Amino acid sequence: MKELQDEKRQEEFAKKKDALDTMKKDKEEQRFKEKLAVRQKMIDRQIEELMKVRNKEEEILNHQVQEAEEKASKLFEEQERRKAEMKAAIERSRAAQIERKK
Image 1: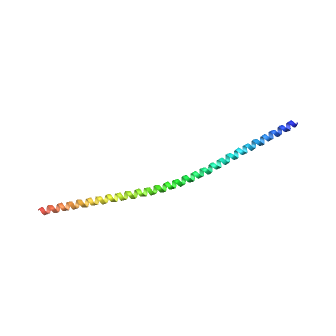
Image 2 (image 1 turned 135 degrees about the horizontal axis):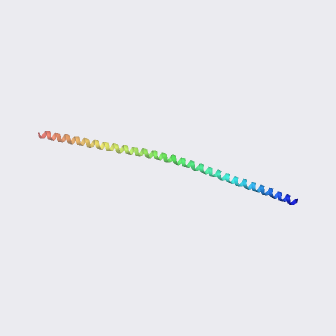
Image 3 (image 1 turned 60 degrees about the horizontal axis):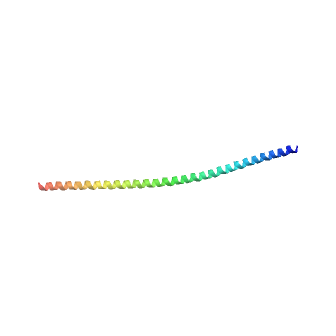
């Protein structure tokens, strides 16, 4: 009879130990998941910040490219205008020379 009681106590002790081990393992897993979630949240925030910086830099770069293209276009137009003026002046000069020769 004493042996049965001892055996029951050992079984109860083993069950309690298993339950505690399971709780411990669950708690460790929960802490791991929480740490992982915190880490992922930090990563996501950093990604968001980097995306904002990249978008701002792209916006600035696009603006600079647009300004450079406008400047180049204005320069080209000015050169074309000057060429046309010089051509017209040459034509007038030739016409005047021909007129004088007559």
